[in-house]
Amino acid sequence: MEEHDLLATSWTWAGRESVRERIDAVTAAGFSGLALSLDDLHDVRATAGFAALRRMLDDAGVVWVQVGTLGDWWSADAEHDADRGVLLEAAATLRAWQVVVRADHSVPGAPLTAMAEAWDHLAAQAEGVGARLVLESEPWSNLGTVERAARFVAAGHPNGGLLLDAMHALRGGSTLASIGQGVAPAVLAAVELSDGLLHTPNGMTLADESRNGRYLPGTGAWDLPGFIRTVRGLGFDEPWGVEVRTPALRAMPLADALRVSAAATRAVLDAADAHGGPPAPAMPTSLAPTSAVDYDVPRGPDVPLVPGSVPRAPAGAGRRAGPAASA
Image (cartoon, rainbow, N blue to C red; front, side):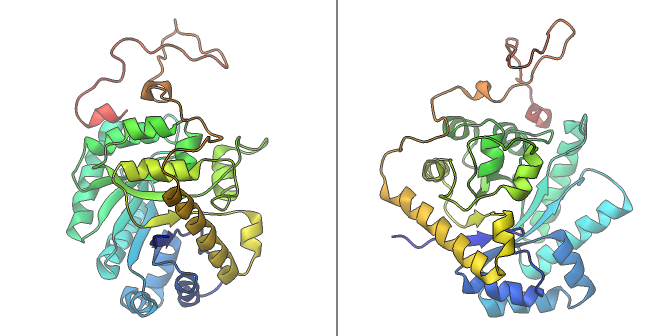
């Protein structure tokens, strides 16, 4: 089977051990890349420094370095300016491949016009330190589907890209067909794999599930081989991000959890390599139009929102020009 580059996301390799010990565990498990969280970056900057961290990564043979995830990047205040500064400094010193940001979690959400201007500015800054700015779509944010987030990114700075997380995409209502139709190949910059249950467990929010219900690839109900073939069809190649997090995995010694995570992910990638046609998946893969999962719901007083119903979008809905078209 083909060899694949794997990247351990910050949750996958989080632990109580020192950063050096955790980096060694990541590479010993067969990962060639890792993502460094803001917390880790702040800690390293205040102690060993980024130059020392770069030497650790080089000594361990780490090829791919990702930093993030940054929120509120459209805000102008001392706290968020400090986080931006640390990320960009780290990206420059560590020769990071990507800087990851998230959309707005607040209600009703930041105006997309303001976010678009800040996005272009930050993308230019990331380009200046040799990294690409990538946006992770989350279902509970104001860019809650991968199709909508892809439009936002495509309308902005050319150094911007989309991070496609399997859990966020599927829980956001996307199908394999809508991903293939709604994400421009030039936009797709990173992919993260995990598995999950057919439905979010009772008593859990989507955010809860994202933190504690990310199963090993191949151990859940999703058609991950089909998902992998879909993103390959969009031109994505390497590395494959691995974002797994459950209480059982956290209870394991970190080295063991990383080995299990890498082996499970490679098995699913091998399954995607081995089959030429799509299998019969548990998740929907019908040729539903993208609008079935991604449109602006009318909010006028004459449009009642009945639980379980889906209002019909008016003709021309969602057709806008410029960065605001990402709404």
